[in-house]
Image (cartoon, rainbow over all chains, first blue to last red; front, side, top):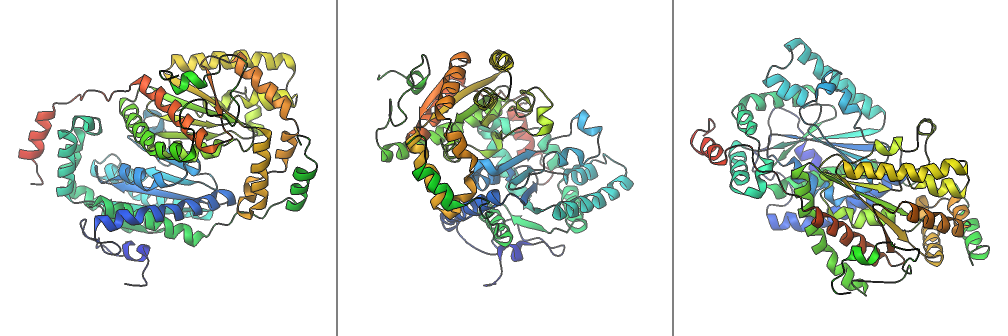
Length: 274
Length: 274
């Protein structure tokens, strides 16, 4: 295990996912994970600045998971470590009527990060093979073609310089119950609660199956299964996966296209403002 | 001074702006200002969450200032304290040919924050009366109509529930020289440097005049002049102005539109997942 990266350990390769409460690599305690985050955050921010300066490639972090799995918390604690200037976040809710008049990828394409940016999708085009499958929103044949469309789309993104990092925030039904009750028991959190969440919860196994199929059929670029019953582990794991991705990209600011010494001379010896 | 808010002190009311190195209210030392920021950040994040939950109104922070005045630094240090999920940042660079085919406010409107969000403009529609004025990019008559168009636009935003907070990051030419040299002397910062910055710098007084005219003619909502030679004061001041704005808006999460006890009962006693 010693030489394995976090991506190596959490990458989905077969049908088996790590247990939602497990900590397959890295810190075993909350205090260790929380203590590690600021250092990771600094390295992330430095690499993000280089990506922004380079301005040719982009990263897209896709966050998927059941309600309360921690998509919002990951954005707050992991994405919150980045410089907001270089971040572009998109939340995909139930499609509007206008959006439904288009191909399902239409609204997704409009939210892609531009070169130099880190995009974050809070839910994504995968909803179109998750809820769409569970609730039979489209005929089976159309569903099958959506997996292919997603694979073609993600290949196109890779080709265009966007590295897609797909994280499935994997929680247990017990953790979800606890978190839904916490929202209900705290008035300040009522706005986060939606009675429809219980209907979705009642289809837990259908959703797990839909996720399994999506993870299997759309495996390039790979998915990472993030054990997410422990919030501190989830944050630590996503932060590291993002960090390893940026380290591999190794963005470099471009060489200056001006004569540095000449500019210093102009500013030092020929400054009209003295 | 004791009862004056930061907004009261820094609001532009006449032609006089505070000195760029001054600290007209609040902390007088870097250590005090830096120490105060996390607490302000927590209050900002709480109010931001309430604004997001309420989801009816929005805030738009407009950052203007000469090159190196700290627009990027303010985003990093002040906006970086917020939850990125509720933030929408737009950077306005030289308009593209496509943008130039439209009215100057066209590209601005496309970047307005939606309800519940805090928008941040890194430069803005004011460039269209600043560089446009200094470099005579439009006839004087068109320029005059732009101030009126901006006033009408900002009144419309207020009407639609977007509170606009306009901050002019005010630096001295000496501070700019120092910061440009710092960029030139540090290879990792070369990407931030643009030789065109020296041409703009050479028109310093014309720009100050253009700013003075814009601040005077477009005074509703008011401008805040942020002394920005000291980065720590700039961050402290903008953070407080944003905080006071949110405190005044006093966003409230909506009351639940469901029966809380009933939902708790469903989840506790009738959960299909046990």
